[in-house]
Image (cartoon, rainbow, N blue to C red):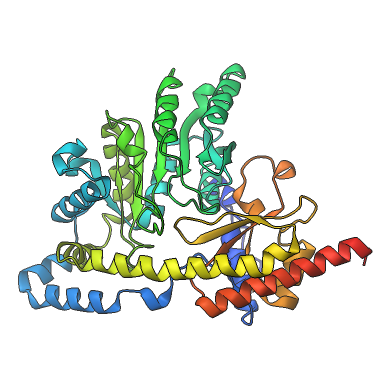
Length: 435
């Protein structure tokens, strides 16, 4: 009896574009190096998850026969209308306005399976292969993978301690126009609050400027701005800022993406988007092809938590907890990184991350001596900064790292930063001696 091997599997082009994502490697490293202190994981603190609130709200829903049947049934693709009404009121509170002053209704809101689904669907609806998305330098590396997955080109725009620079954005748009490629620009993507990975927020005066630039350079077609506001409720210092979306008075340019994964529970997988009118149908149509609508039961749990006031109380407790952990990482950086004399960093006002900059010759990538020393010998992990820069791989900056204080407790943060400092010190000494 003879056997023949199965014919080779032929994948789509999108499979190739989406291959070798860094998040998979980081997860593998975490599993294989269990003794490491992970400052890489962007997960939320498990001790802050709202187990009691979810138990209470779930019990209340299930005790009401009509509410239980509704929550356990299929929903609608854009999300339950009562849930979207609740989200609209929450958005108004965040913006410091009445619902009427927002200028949009529930027909502009779509509930998604976390904000990641909205980012993915928007990318699918806007980009053809070769189209351009302008992103901050650095930016959220998972979204760079999303862009790769649809064949889009991510072009970096310079940033500083106040976020994306409007002058750099305009120069990039002018350069693309001069090169005859302005018509390929479909989107400007930015994380407006406590950016992952840099921890900076887009300055208040820059927010309307970004909207105005997108409008002005929408020559042959509209250039949208995608505001990823995943961390807007995790502010520890200063006053909240109006969203970029709030400066789009016609509500036809900015797409607002928010999630409850950071402020409540990633396990519920609830996010939402506020869309320009002519993007609503395309996004809902595509979402309908994917899932017929996000799961009803988590929406019902979240709605009840918000309307009862338990969500707001939870966010207050969460901010207090993360503020302590942010302070612990800042203190650890002052104790262990500052004495090295070569590490630069900024104190974040919110979010979950500390972004560090090393000398240009001290690379941080997976194959670098620093990453190998840190993960294999000193027992600490971080996210290499080069993952967060778009553009040609040969020109990406390779001397930054993202540290997260989300998962570790205060003692773990202290130990992790101490170990990282030890690794940096060792690699610096080796470079000096030639060892």
